[in-house]
Image (cartoon, rainbow, N blue to C red; front, side):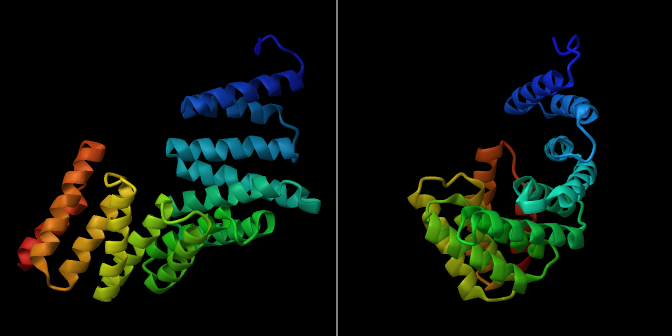
Length: 272
C-alpha cells in the first residue's frame, strides 16, 4: 500500500506507523530505512522535518552509530531553534539535546556533551519544572559526564543533588537512586574519603537487598564500590571478598564476567 500510495500525507502516516512498530520490536536498523524515506517526504525546515531528523537521531543512537546520531540531532535542534516561537517544539528540542549529549558522551566529546546536557537541563526545568523526575535525570546525566572527565568534585555535586531529588520524589526503591549512591561511593573512594565511600556503598547494598534486586547493575556496582573502598582503606581481605562477589553476580546477570572486576581482584592480591 505504501509503495502504491501517491498522497504524501498518507505515505507519511503509513511510514510513521511502520517506524513505531519496528521500534516496538527493537528493529532499529529497519527504523532507519523508513526514517530516511520519511525525511524525504517531510517539508523542509518544518516541525515534521525536525521530527524525521529526531527519529534518525534516536534510532542511530540505539544502533550504536553515535556520530550519525549527533549529526541528525544537531540538525533537528537547528530547525527547532528557528521555528520555536511560543515554545513550539520545546519537548522535541529537549529530547534532541538529551540524545546529542548522550551521543557526544559516547564519542568522548565531553565539551559538546556538557553543552547539550546543560540545554537539556534548562528545557527540563522550563517544561516539567525543577522538581520533576525528568529534571532529576538531567542532573544525573551531568554528574555522569563530569565523572567521565574525572572532575570528581562536580560529579559528587550533581550525583548528590540527583540522589536527593530521586529520594524525595520517588523514594529509596528507585534504581536510579542506588546508581547515584554507587557513583558517590566510587568518587569518594578515589578521593580517599574512605568513611564516606563505605557509607554510600553500604547504603546501596542494603537497599538492593531490601528491594530484592541484588542482581541488578546498581547492586553489582555497589558491591564493586564496597570493594574499592575497602581496598583504598587497606582492608585487602574484605576487598577480595567483594570483588569476587561482583564477578559472581555479573556472571549470573550477563552470562559473563567483566574484565574490570578481574583487574581489581588482581590488584588486591598484588597489594596483599
